[in-house]
Length: 291
Ligand code: SF4
Image 1 (cartoon, rainbow, N blue to C red):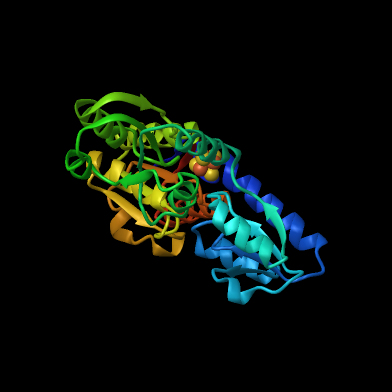
Image 2: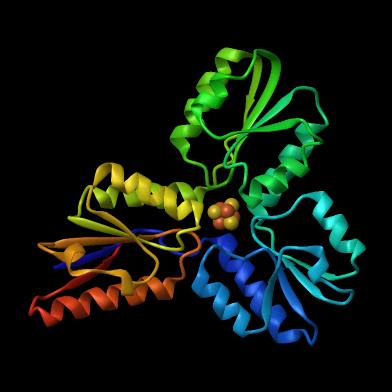
C-alpha cells in the first residue's frame, strides 16, 4: 500500500501569510479582533481562530471604533476600505500580494477606454473586491456560454480570478478574440494554483483512489475535486479523515491525497496517519511519499 501526497498540497503563500498576520495580531492586541469575512474557507481553522479570540465580521454593524479588523487574503474593494476607515477601526491588511497586483491591474485598466472582463465566480470575495476597482467597467464571466452571449466591442481586456481554471480561461479568451477588435489578455491565474492542479491531475493518473481534502465551501478545493474526478472516478472529497469509509479504501494499492490552498497541512498529515493506521490494522505494509 502506497500513500502519495500531491505536490503543493495545503496552504498557499497568501493563506499562510494571512494566518500568520492574524495570529500575530491576536497575540499583540488587547482589543476586539475580527476578520472581515472568514479568513479562509476551512471550518476547522475558523474554529481555531475563534478560540484565539479572532471573530468573523461580515457587517459594519458588528464593529465599533477601536476594534481591529483583518482583511483576508482575497482582498476587498476600495469601498469596503473606506467604510471600515470611517468606522475608525484599526486595519491589518492581509490581502495576498498577488491579489493586490490583480487589483492594481483592474484599477489601471479602469482608467483606460474599453470593457474589462473578469473570468471567475461572481460571488467570490476576490471578485467582489476586483469589481470595486473597475469603476463599473468590469463584468464577470463565469463560463464559455456567457462569453458567447457578449456583443462585439472595439476594445476589451480580459483577466482571471487568481484561482481560475486555466482551461476555462483559455476558452473564454478564444471566444472574446472573435468578438473584440483589440483584446488585451492578462493571465492572472496564480502560479501556486496552476502547480497544484497539474500535480493533482498527474497523481489522479497514477493512483487507484484520490482523496481531495478541504473545506466543502472552498472553490479551489472543489476545482481540484472536479479535475481529479474527470480522470479518476474513485475520487472522494473529504473535509477530515473521519469521513474516510472502508469502501473508499477497498482494493487499493496506491492512494493519492491532495488539498486546496485553504487546507491545513495538519489535516493532510492526520489523513495520512488515519489511512496508515487503517491499513496496519488490516496487516498491510504502507509507504508514504510526498511528491
Ligand atoms: S491562491 Fe495565489 S493569489 Fe490566491 S491567496 Fe493563494 S497565493 Fe495568493
